[in-house]
Each structure stands twice: as structure tokens, then as C-alpha cells.
Length: 174
Image (cartoon, rainbow, N blue to C red; front, side):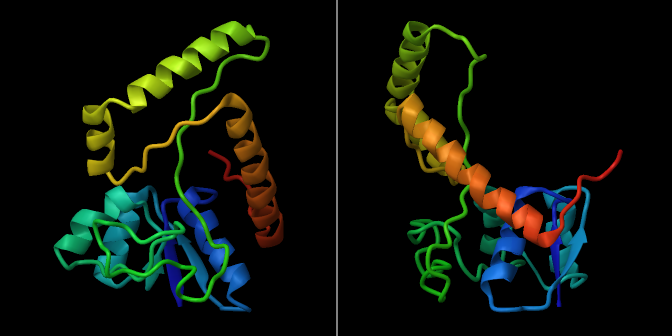
């Protein structure tokens, strides 16, 4: 069996490698494409059998019945496709792979400025129109503190560093 990805080292690739490592030896072969769109088309065309893909990018294909959603990678079912189970429900405890966005500032930025920027961002994320627009694109809106985000980054670095080392993933030369 093969799996498509948006390219070597992309979140799609890493999520599949995490799945592979937690499956107990599933033998699946990586087929990298030049982006998520071509990878999704490869699945539709039967060139590969599966892929991990962003929710926002896959929903139109799922609604059009060109792709079949097998599981969501977050800890809870999605309201957009409540019939689709989570990876955890499918027997992969602790499988929690979600795209996230954060705001970073240069090292040495004064704490007062960081606190103000964080407060302003939290206020913007609380605006109903902003939340609704982000949700339409398959995003869960959360805000946190700089300390919580730093802890999140530390966990992500540890997890994905291990996946990359164990899978022997090397950066591509362009």
C-alpha cells in the first residue's frame, strides 16, 4: 500500500509516519507529490491508497464523494463530519495531530510588548465574525499565553523530532 503526501517533511508526511510507527508495523510506502492538491488528486485517481490531509483542503472532496474520510486526527469528532471517528476511537490512543498557527516575535522583545500583542490577539480571536470565518475553514480557534505556546512548541519539537529520526527523513535538496 502507498500513501501520498504534499512532499517530504510536510505535516502530511510526518502524520503518516507517526501513524505507521504506531500501527505495529504497517508496511506503507511514501509517495511524495508537489503539494496537497496533487496528492489529493493522486488518491482520487487511484495512484495511492491513502493520505493525511488538512481538513480544510479535504472537505470539498469529501462532500463531493471523491474522497472518503476515514478518521479525524484531533481528539474530538468534527461537527462538519460527525459520523467520522477520531484516530483515538479507531485504536490509536493519544493520536493528536492538528495543524496550528502561532505568532512569534524576535528574541529579546520586551515582555510588556509581548503581553500587549498577546492580549490584542486574544481579543481579535474572540470576535464572533473572526471565529466564524476561521471555523468555516475547518479551524478550531484557541488562544493561550506565551508560556503555554512555548510549552506546546517544546512538545511538538520532541514528538516530530522523534518521528523524523525514526523514519530517517532527510531534507530534500532543491
